[in-house]
Amino acid sequence: KPAPPTTLVIFGAFGDLTRRLLMPALINMTRLGLVGDDFHVLGVGIDEGNDQTLRDALGSFDAKGGEGAGEKGEAWARLKDRVGYLQGDFTKDDVYEALKTRVTGNVAFYFAVPAKFFGDIVDKLAEHGLMAETPHAFRRIAIEKPFGHDLASARDLNARILDKVSEAQVYRIDHFLGKETVQNIMTARFANMMIERVWNSDCIAHVQITAAETVDVGTRGKFYDATGALRDMVPNHLFQLLAMVAMEPPANFDAEAIRNEKGKVLKAVRAYSPAQAERNGVRGSYTAGKVQGHEVPDYTATADVAPDSHTETYVALKLMVDTWRWAGVPFYLRTGKAMTCRDTEIVITFKPVPFASFPGAAADMLPPNRLIIQIQPDEGLSMDINIKRPGLEVATAPIALDFRYADAFDIGHLTGYESLIYDLFAGDQTLFQRADAIEAGWAAVQPFLDLWATDQSIPEQYQAGTLGPAAADALLAHDGHAWHELAPAGQTVP
Ligand code: BG6
Image (cartoon, rainbow, N blue to C red; front, top):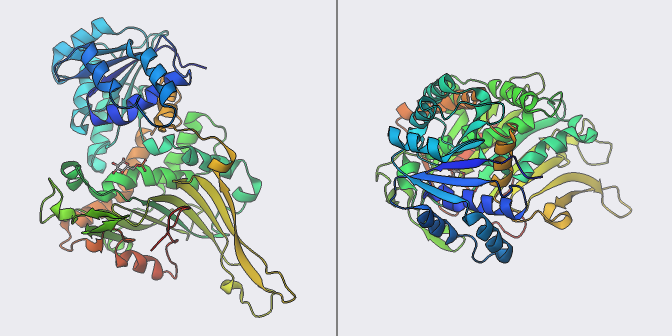
């Protein structure tokens, strides 16, 4: 059913995010009937232009080739006339006065602009009366990451925003929550007795959360060198995955019930001392190499990256979640650029059986059961179990029960933003981050940020196209574990 009639005001109309993600999502939403003919887009930006200029700029990218090109072309043809442009400087008042004459009714303001403008835009929207809601008209803001660059700045930004608008009006986006497989984590856990009953420290030995990327820093040097892998991926994306894995079952599927549980578990991630942070964190930075046949230069030779940069492009952490359920179960997280293959996955490794009755096999020599939630690519779920090897001898063999979404469903070609934008219009905050969860995420990584800001040691180098620095392997080896091999279907580890 189509979302309520809404005007989506996009600050940063000509930006990369609008072009690459927002517009393709809006076109898909038009195509799928998730927005009706009463849906409007108003771009705001500094660039010279009028409605037609923006339509031309946006129309030139997506509607062309690719999957469903014809349908997308038709959807764009329908949407195009409802796209408008307001030229102006969003740090100045006159744009907001002009906005007041251009929008009425339900309005969602989308901040597709650099983070340093977030606070100013909220202030101005509120000062000009644009955030005032009525029973018939909502006013909401959608904010992309980065939400702050450390705990203090995230707290300041939350305080500044919540001084002007209510939490119910704020939709903090983490695009990982738009991914089907991420949403499936809760279903896998809470719709299956046989999974949830063993989901605790009695049965689980450790959890690994990986987001390996093949992309290098490329043209994003300026942003990335000031950010690094930890800030870019961990307190947001990887912690969303961690929260879904570790949260307690919500009493219902209301946004607040779910956000309460996620907030609680993120607050339970152990706050490390500097010495603990040093033991439990590894940084890496890539050197020149080949990633899937493509030459990648040294990270420090990337445009807009300082030649003596100590920014990490890889990070691995061992975290503890101090709750009854997870006492003593390490959560290992890793993410990096320019790695062997693209693979985002969660691997739950179970404890050995308490006793092995089989001749010749000690319990801890049987391969442990594993549940692998494959987030992307090749979305799926698989389980490693042991079976009897056929034959007269009693011998076991490990096998994988393997489910791939693509084999069972048409998962379409959506960007992941469709469900987020739909929920933004429909007023469902389940898939958006509440202020407390954002701050809990930053609080958990702050000891690493502090350590690495003062630490004289530099990230360990790893060659582009490999699995990351050796110290990340040592982090697990120290506990008697090893990283799950990265080899999603269709790709091989050399
Ligand atoms: C973004 C980061 O938030 O997420 C990028 O800024 C990263 O550096 C991207 O590449 C990963 O998202 P996805 O959906 O491609 O896994």
